[in-house]
Image 1 (cartoon, rainbow, N blue to C red):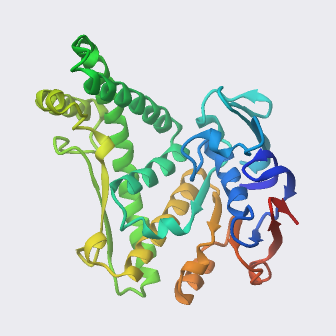
Image 2: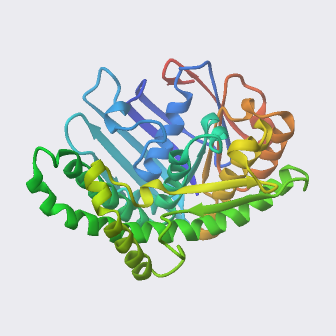
Image 3: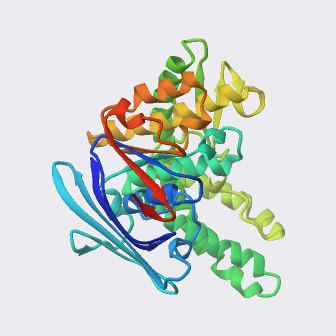
Length: 367
């Protein structure tokens, strides 16, 4: 799969821009804050309906604009696609695929997938559980559209329940609706847990092999999925998981009402990463944690490729400059076979090495 061309209007610092890409390697260079990452962000957004950087769509609209538009010509599954998104201030976005309205972001993920790797991801291991949950969610939302639906429903139920618990002292009558949202969290949460457990199993396998190659066979990487303690087998059927979640939530109902917080659920899940049997977050060196994070991102690419039969579009945002020469060489040797976008501050002849095009970005314009 590949992105052949991209058109932006009032997106981030781009007023109006159209650009055609190479099917192999695209090197995008320029000084900091000129718009290199914004190009990659647009490509990611059109693949999943979510930004890897912004919390709200309104942040993507140029300061002087009231709306923004993103459009891409894509070749995937031996077909041509046209994906378009319009963003507005104060109202819902519009999304279409080949002119047909896309009701959910899952419709975008069915066209093409991306793997986005930025310097922050090199600290994926050292950060809190929320960063690793986000990694899981981003990967699974593209891989399994039903997961994206379950995740959105779970978040809505969680937010409703949180507001009810928070406001229950002033509005005790709200507690009557609490069981409805608790049950929604149970049903959707069971689906999330099973999807995450299945993905974590494959991630552990692929990432371990990649890590062993990068470390010259000196280190062993292990990844373990951690969820609600009452769930005895996260790979069991969803009905079994839901029953265990239901009992667990009932046991914690009094504590949740007293603390006015949602204390139980997959919104606290984590991935436990170890290198040679030691907790990577606590005991590993900076080089070891970077290799582990790198292995997880490259494993994400391989999992997507094996699932859909094509390599996803790989976007490396100024990552190579953060890696030592050995890890740079390892990454460059592993990215053949699919379309790649690489941003850097200088034209360092990567396109000549990998074969492709070079683009210079200056003040929101691609030269």
